[in-house]
Length: 550
Image (cartoon, rainbow, N blue to C red):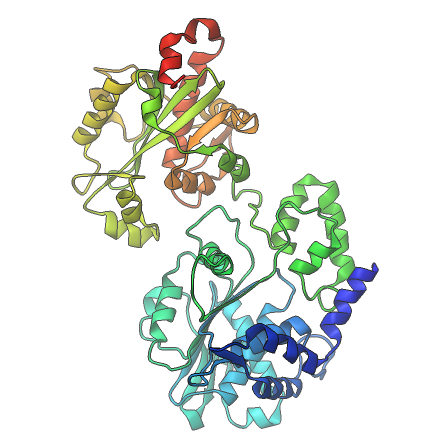
């Protein structure tokens, strides 16, 4: 352990409360807000009388600096106008084994006894009852081991409820089933492990249910998600916090504490370890993290897990993201189709279920740049957009308004309109071939084959493995130009690959829709098959250069 590490550990364990308070006053005091130093001292005194639920039995709580900073920032920053708390929502994003549950237990236990309101409820939930119960048990332990606190409550452990009858209030674990959350109006709500949330429905209902109180508080706890899904609740809250940090969004009632290492940092950089793990060297064991970092440095297969789990970076783990999104994002460009008028192109067609997304992805070969250009045409039934947006927690309606998806009339994919759209494209480009998935495409293919060359492509490993290999090689060689369509990028982040008789991108195991990626693979496969060994001199002529604007 070097001097830097020893210094960081000493900062966290100094116990110099007055110095910590002065730092927070400098940070928060202005014309609108102030840091209530008296309440911060009161909070510290209260917590110091409670026992830790882990470690040496009977040991009293001694807060580390980062724990004190988070707790008192949430509780003690107040508005000068009415002395009410500034922060109504808090997002804490930190790697495992840094005691995020302990921090929340300190906050909630204090608020339950010192800042409660008559008839209120404190709601604890997570993605599983087991996760929520672990947080409840920490709070229960703090209360049950203090004779003064214990006499004011009745603990019903089997039901995961703590009742405070003199205030007619309860602290309770509730189900993660959002359909049952409408009846709750929590004063304080804790939503744990939001990176695993299936949707944002529970978060939304808890947030809206707090509107009857003067000083509500919603706390979300998490570690980093893969970062591939922009609709993941952790990713949404992370991006929201970052937009506040950059000054792009204004919300003075939203507190966030995000502990993460810098992107692409050296795995052995100790400064980055402490950036992500403020408890390092205390209850987060230094030697253990150092050993894991060494293994991750030597074994590339462990790097992603180390970055995600210990540096809190948005990195997909094995099986989560088959497509390297860093390489994908490097290929994104704003493509103008007019640039490729009259040029040969190849398509992949992936028909969805009749009331979902159908993908028709266009691929050009740009000889001058020796790159393949990918342009998606995505379709969905107009009449069911709102219903499916709510079901999938994806704003298809917004994507339609912005032109990233085309809405077809009716409740189902309108084959006639889709066929007409494709025929119009043929008037602008030379459609060489259309590769299609046999499943669900019989109706429209029988019409398309009258005008186009259509190629049936199975979706098993035997057919798709070569297509995936072509795509991945081109991606690594930076020989793709991918149209900057956020729906297609979202689909790329959903992909999970399986290997059964050859690698394929598996629709059933992927996190959400990947129709556009399947269509892209088919179109790209046909384009590559027809452009290998192309005669550059023959194809780069005056007409071609003129179309490029040269």
